[in-house]
Amino acid sequence: DAGVIQSPRHEVTEMGQEVTLRCKPISGHDYLFWYRQTMMRGLELLIYFNNNVPIDDSGMPEDRFSAKMPNASFSTLKIQPSEPRDSAVYFCASIQGATGFDEQFFGPGTRLTVL
Amino acid sequence: AQSVTQLGSHVSVSEGALVLLRCNYSSSVPPYLFWYVQYPNQGLQLLLKYTSAATLVKGINGFEAEFKKSETSFHLTKPSAHMSDAAEYFCAVSRSAGNQFYFGTGTSLTVIP
Image (cartoon, each protein chain N blue to C red):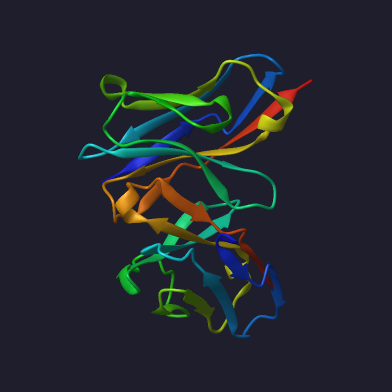
């Protein structure tokens, strides 16, 4: 398995533009988490899914953020419109819950810069 | 509510010296506890976890951590630091399988040759 795949790895956009981040989890994993990491706030959970269903989206900062998981092999995080304060590294994590967290892997992240 | 506090945002040790990274947790239920390592420009990698089995947990790369309920601590140790251990380390707590993780603010470990 290639591990958790995130794309793009780097994104530079201008304020007001729509940004879509993508994540392909590890096959067979039933949990998918989206995190945001900044120097100021550290790692923040944005949303997580279980079997493609959103379980907790209380970390999504505003209505500008939305996430979907249409199937077990793909998830998107969309920001519309983007703002400079959204600049951060966004991580996707894939976990097999039945293993008691033994099987958990983070993707390499997407570094987002909003100008 | 669950939370973790990592004492010391920066720790420096000499190569070959003991590594001790501190983590205290707060949890209303028996917790799951984790340590992760993050190398520059990479995602987090699980080092070890505590899930109510043995209180002394051994992880990868020679690290281990001891769950001490009386002290609400889960400190990470390694007997002898290696240059390759230089990275950011995060402690995290979760209530149970299927619940979210709460991360500490991280500790940056520097290893001095």
